[in-house]
Length: 339
Ligand code: DGY
Image (tube, rainbow, N blue to C red; front, side, top):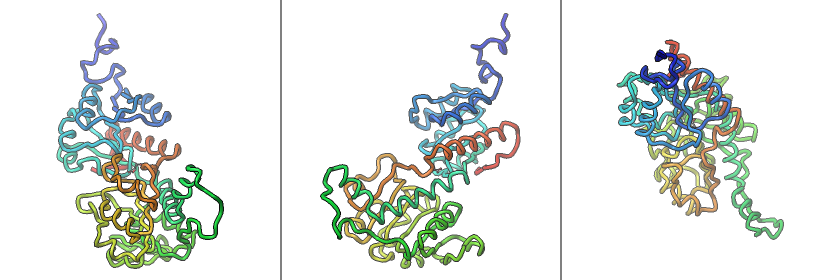
């Protein structure tokens, strides 16, 4: 008789037949990441890249006998989904730096380790922030639409005049890794950097940027405002009509953090009135069902959450998530443990 260990169909141990720990990947990941996951684990992949609900992820984790779940930014892992995860799941490693899609308190209460992927997406996200800044300031969407619609009748001295960013004041709310990387890039364009953060940076990191302890007090000097703080219950709709009213008239808004930190209705109203000159946005509340008002405005430069979307960065994020799973499976502390 074939022993359970030899029988390839036997899953009574809850483990995949290989005897290796089992990992559930909730979404399709870059080939190199999936290859490493399959090399080191009994990996359940999602080749069709179906977006599953939290309840479905929990059910798939049970079916896979998962010891670890590698999840992604769009997966809603609320308290109910975390409670439904099978007890053998020890770690939830998210393929993102943001953790707002996970109920961290529920994870903590259940003793589930949660990890993220900081550092590796800093440069890619800062690059996208600069793309948004330039695209919004220089009216890139309008120009591109004009050409695609065959509506360009030729160069004119006053066509699509935008805002020169050199010499303008960039206000960064949240001067962590990404905020600092944005500041470095913006400095190269001749911008004057202001920032607000819980604590001032040491001089070697501040590189001459002006610190504002109170973000509200910084708003009046922000010709461009770029948001770099996490989405939490406290920061929901932080940029509201009142705070927009404190910005200089014609300010430009950049958001690569999370959509929920701005009040869409207030931003759209300010863009429509010209109170905000333009907005460059990579993230939206309720992605992918963003507020339709953004699409109708000429002065928005919109990207579909591309902040970390380079091959190099997405590979690095996947490897970092797997490093965290490796650590937990080996009984070590995960390097990027959030909970
Ligand atoms: C993150 O890592 O939080 C990004 O938004 C997803 O790329």
